[in-house]
Picture 1 (cartoon, rainbow, N blue to C red):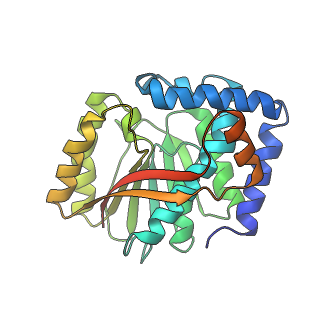
Picture 2: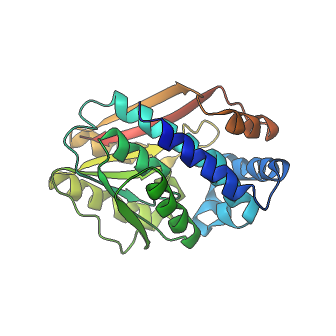
Picture 3: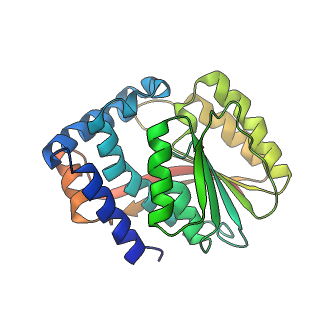
Length: 251
């Protein structure tokens, strides 16, 4: 288990920072609005709408970042070889850095580099790396122009990122990921299990990963986060009993 004193200290730091200017009730209201974006209006996410207010940024950091950490850490533990002999993680569209940090820690504190186009996310990601004791840094970059290089000992992660891209960018990304795999990298894509909307690109990506020997998975884990996240979820009208995700993996 990677969760321990560093994990607890990271969660405490998130709470101190993001509840210094907002009440828990205000963050819960923002979380409800943010969850609506993710479930019902995902087409607006590419414009940065998920982080367009202090309340939504706090809700993302306090709730979704720990949830993403939990999901990715559990997925890595259950994917054969995903944590073996990895020296570094490249987190594409890193957000606050939680998902990439989870893989890096499961791999024995691998070095991490992340990039995202949102300056607030980059600041949060670098805090995440420091507070969890990881080597590496996040930088501001656009996925359309950032280098995604493949080599042995590198894991390339796209967690809760691909579906938020505009179709043209998403279509150009797939061959770059397959090329990184051909050069020796492991590639992991993580997305929510979306039941209300059909995610048209997923089937094509699944077929492409499958042709290269990859696998598709669906995951369900108990919601094992602390009381603060439990309380935020309930106040926002969410069901905190389990964390779900689906993946594409080239290992």
